[in-house]
Length: 207
Image (cartoon, rainbow, N blue to C red; front, side, top):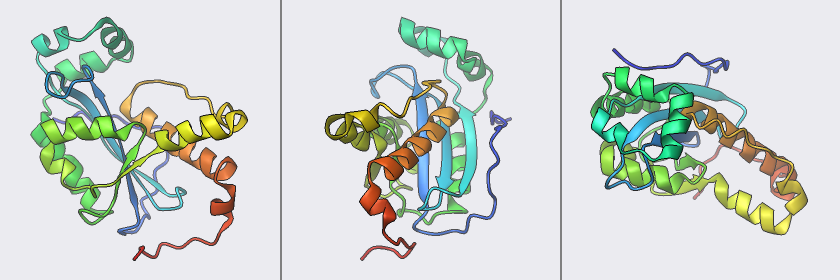
């Protein structure tokens, strides 16, 4: 049994395998400390370098014990309770090892190992948890991160009017958060990185 949610998006199955494709990832956790908290949901999405082709991967609730779930603070209990994630975690039979195997198999269809940075918002936090609890999946990624939060912080300081133009829904589900991160990067590319975005771009790998 797996815990894969059906998506309302329309993923494109025509994305060719390429080292220039980008792997987007988001996790929901029981807290912020990878030594004491655990992963309860993970989702992955692959895009091409231009962000105009999207393929959704597994969306998995990771089973955790009632003892682990009981240690969550009030914010996490309320947020993940309202979304239904806590119930999915209790019902799931997927552990970290099974999730690693499923996700690596999916990613291998679109990106060679070690080529894509880990993409998302505040992605270093996800990477810390992955290194602790899913190290074989963390090893699939390049050591670099593509963190949309970096552009967010620069835009907030340099172009505050543009910064205010993108409003997040903050749904706090892994797949929704990934799509929001991709949309946010598209927004910054169009409105904040105008000179760079207007230059001819190719999928040729950098030297």
